[in-house]
Image (cartoon, rainbow, N blue to C red):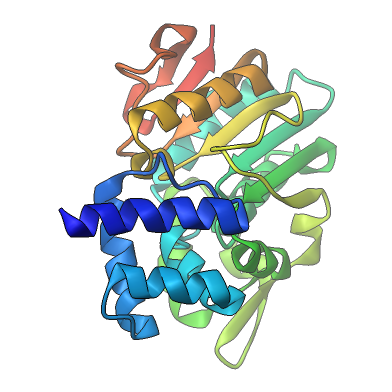
Length: 269
């Protein structure tokens, strides 16, 4: 019980001090992440962590890296990208120009995956991609397009399974223990700070991809995010969710129809 009170006070303090709103995030997930941050920041209690982040913005930025779960991989769940190629891209071709929103883009792996897919399907040059997140460090890394060489084997396998049409190595240059992805992939990408908890819709889009983000929200915040996606999407626009996420039982369940239910791709009714 004291831990729950301390956690609520910490989350409220973060909101009041830094305007980051985690109040409707899953409490179980928050508790686990805060425990990890406590160990890293050498804070024996959540209250000690609260005191520190209130007075040390650098400590808060360290905590933020735990709270925003900046973990991803390129072409994660390749079946999702294969379904986009086969079932969504043919319909996207009917638009003269496209806008895509990658919500909760983390360090950019999903952004570059979509950019590669759109490039191979002849759509990237007429597409604007909005890549948003609340973590400024993650956005900075995403904009750089630099990833660890150790991950390339997994990324390459995912790319091939997603229906990739070229050698994956065509898209990056390697040096030492890093790879740099081609600048042309992010030429039409706008990286921006945006919170699904507090901010509003900023553009009409044809595709929203928000994967493995909603699982960290409670039901109210999930419905808020889905409401933003519904408002953002144009008539008959597409929504992609993570493999463990669903529209079932949400306030927007009837506002979308399944394009590929196993791959969590939906279309606005």
